[in-house]
Length: 67
Image 1 (cartoon, rainbow, N blue to C red):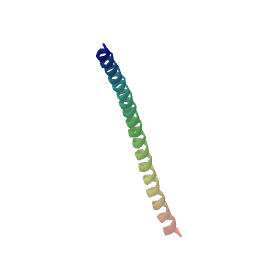
Image 2 (image 1 turned 30 degrees about the horizontal axis):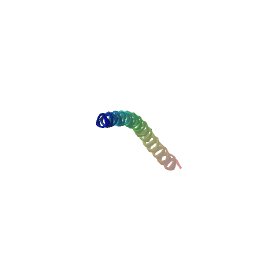
Image 3 (image 1 turned 120 degrees about the vertical axis):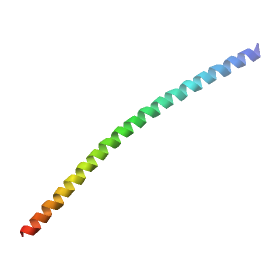
Image 4 (image 1 turned 60 degrees about the vertical axis):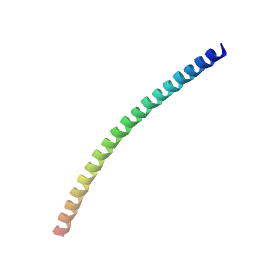
């Protein structure tokens, strides 16, 4: 009887550990998706800033030529 009780305890602990692992995996996947989304936003912002920088450099060159 003690062995059966111990076996049931082990099974319950395994189920709990597996459930926790599954929850952590879902959380990790969610965070990964969020980070990928933010990375895309940052890449877009970076590209826009590079384009504005190019425009400003060109405008600055035009102003210097006009002086």
